[in-house]
Image 1: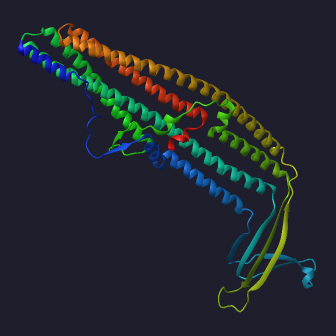
Image 2 (image 1 turned 45 degrees about the vertical axis):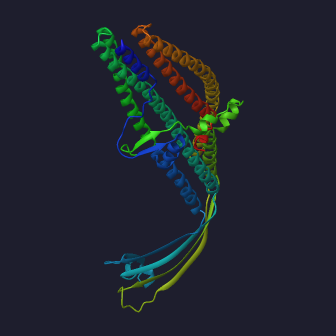
Image 3 (image 1 turned 90 degrees about the vertical axis):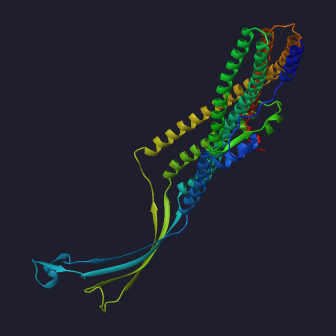
Length: 451
């Protein structure tokens, strides 16, 4: 009898809730909050870096467009050698031999020249349109960078929350496994003292094996999810990380009233489409600018000489210079520009349809995200109450089992119910976080997660 109460006392201690730790790993572990993960990614992710390079390309394209309006200076020179000078035929009348052709060679064996040429564009309608288009293109690259950052923020946040959810589920199952391990050890002692039947020990072993399998699956899933997170932020896979529950800005999301039009206007994609529309307008104007004449000025200054010998000759270099204007007036191009203008106008209409589609899609996203937020809030409250109820049932069943009133099957069922209730609550918390992300995305406010 004394031995029986001693064993029951041990069970009362070991069946208290246990707290598990994250899977043990070697090396230095870097703790990451959501904001730290995002900031690390914005500095290291390859897609963001490429978008930044594109933005810098836009800056250089503006310089390239401006260069056409600046003076163009070139230097040229050359030497021509004639092993056989070209022959010209002159009429014999020039030499008093009418009716005869006289072959004459003009020039020297060596002809050399050197020139400096300056050209300045005075008027070209296409040039002015190109300058505006280049500046707008730079805005386009900037918006693409912002879109790349927003996509990255969304992907990282989703991966972060999913990894946190797996971690919490891991801790929940590991705590249950520890309780079952201790209970198995005690049941073995009881069985050896003929206090319980063999079937009760086997039930514990079956439940323990099932939990071990779940734990192994979660361990693999947890490592895979951490690797996905490292991939998004471009962190070395060998670097061990530990996630915290500090989720920052997303906890401050407020569901204040906002129209679909306001939400769409805040989206980077909306601004990007309007910038594309503006660029297409410039493209049309650039084609139309081809109907205008162009005017440029030029000047050239140089020297040339003709000699029998390239070096050592007394023949001097002769100075030459010229200045002038050049005008080009387009007359007819076979309706090529007219066809290009019409193509541009059709592309413009396609972009307008994309803008309309985005506005409609934003309205759907906003409505669905709000509905999911409200549903998740209610579900979380219900699941919390369910966890409290399951915990109460487990505690009562545990006490009754220690007193010998309830059978082991009731205790195991209560333990499974508690575990499922905690899992359901964990899943609802994840759904709520994802709903918050979708709501921020629908509003075009994902950037607040970096603050």
